[in-house]
Amino acid sequence: MTNLNLSGFSTRIAYCEAKGLSNVFTAYSENCCGEDIMEIGFNGFSGYVYIALENGISICSCMGQGIEYLVTNFDNGDESFFEDYNEALNFQNTLYENQ
Image (cartoon, rainbow, N blue to C red):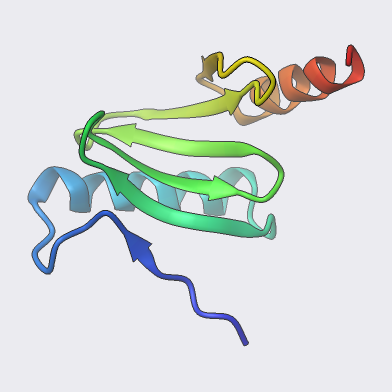
């Protein structure tokens, strides 16, 4: 059994971070439950709470707001945000088919 650790959080989780965690876990359960999770964390520079999936898509919530799905082009570092998981998945598939 593997343990998932929370990265980037202090010993106290602020309201916005807790709300963001709730949002990303709800989105995970509704849209991509069963996908392997690489990391769960908080980025203090951007304010995003995220679940990074092994398939390369991250589920993000900034300051406890709505959900965005992030696809990063690892060749050039470009980040693309989507409001729908399937749109992110389709974009990612197209991105890697063209390489």
